[in-house]
Amino acid sequence: MNRGFGSGLGNSEMVNSSQTLGEHNGVSQGREKAHYASLCVVKDADLQSVFNAFNIPDEATNERVNVQADHYKIVREIGRAGIVLLKNEKPKQKFPHTNTDLGRPALPLTGRERAVLVAGLDAALQRGGPNMFGDQGGNEGILAMGQRGFRLRWPALVFILTLALRTTAQFPYLISPYEALQHHALFNRSIGTLFYWQFDDFTPSALTSLRSQAARKDAALVFINSDSGEDYINFDGNEGDRKNLTAWHNGHTLVQTVASR
Image (cartoon, rainbow, N blue to C red; front, side, top):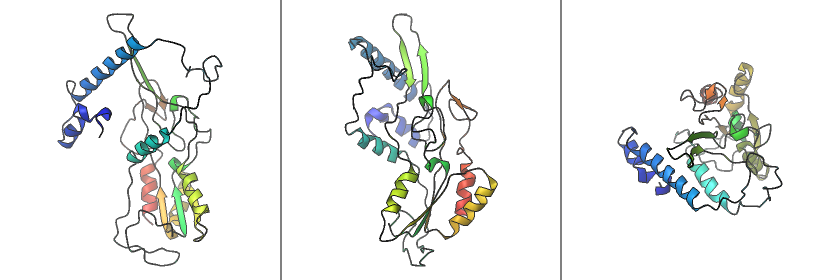
């Protein structure tokens, strides 16, 4: 792990040795470094007008400057590293449609799959667009960013304001797993891949249908998630941080339903 992402705080070593982060170790160090950095920023800034994230259409501050550059590279790298991928470890499998021997575990996909099923709301587009929820404080469709948290702390010197926040950003675009996988299936013309999807994670009839749909697919990919944030956002009964460690949207049942076939 890069030192800037936390290994310098001793977190990795503590996790590997089954220790917990107490008040006077990694967490305290992180808080002190964040506090010091915020003071440096305030000290060195000339405090000119900046982009107003609380009023995006504001013509006085929004100059619509494209600042994306090649940031997508590190964004995708972090995204890939943050995905938990579970796969079937059987030594050999057969394609149900052709009964041909796959000769290896189920993943990665080969590109020769004739029928693919994508299941789970986390694979879907957000029905209200990539920035459907303010401060990303919701979880309907693909979850690409956690919620925003915001805390204020006033030190003894009242003219110094320390912010401890976990912020969010507006997506310029957001490609869901459903879109990306269907794109590959559409252009896999030599194979003629059949592409199916099911985004209903709850309805009993949908789960029953999903079980039968998964039965004769060369690959069935299930997408689930859990969300968290801090303080002021309450979504689906989760105030800030999630209330337990289970997958959201009935995800455990969804996985078991597909895996049973």
